[in-house]
Image 1 (cartoon, rainbow, N blue to C red):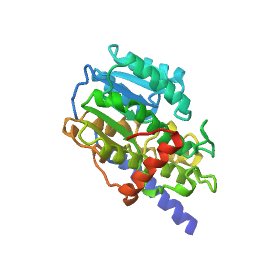
Image 2: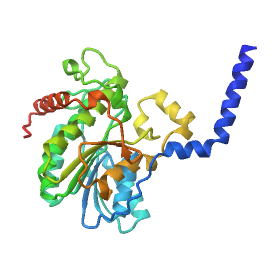
Image 3: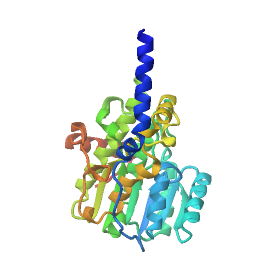
Image 4: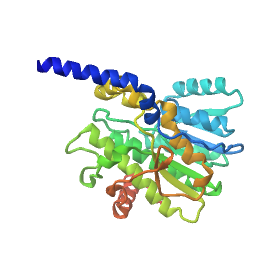
Length: 318
């Protein structure tokens, strides 16, 4: 009898989901960037732009007239993504450059060539990331989540910050996640050598993104360079490739999750919205200000993370 009741209950839930699917999708899609701002003459750099929300962000900003540099670890996939953007918009100015955020030598080489070839940078979108991967280390010995999601972007931004200042007004957009709410910066074991949980490592790196954006915004006051972080939403993308459980969830509950286009909307909004021209140090979701967990608002933690990041990377950043 109990089994029959459970089956009947699941059937009712399934029926309700089917009936209300259009309404659920409308709610799950979240906000859409309504700005019609053009980007003619502007240069944009997007990391991880060969797939998912990075690709959709690149497509949108290219269609607004920007010169978009797609920084990708896999150049072949990057070129394929760029080709689809050009097919949709023949006038799109998109180009692919190799960047491996898991290798500081690659980051430095990328920045050196970028600064040699390009004279302006108006929008930097730190979009690339890894999620819930098995325990691995970057070339430099950093745990992969903190190494790619935070330290790689920290180094890249430090190397390009002078160009951003000279190109002002300019914007930096840091793609974080709602997962930052469940993260803590484990300064005693930042690289998870004592214990490792892929979910917690991911959450730590996403909290680091929020703290970095807030601290960088504080340090850039008066420069006309703004910095904001975003939560793109729960997006069905390649980011879940390391987690079978997440992949199953995305498939079964696809009606509740965003498409990459929908997930890109907040990044686009923070990159182009006219009303955000002087807004900095904030966190956004669904194209609106969003809640930041208490640990993401700690100035002490942000400054300590900044100092530790500089030490790990062997850089000085005033």
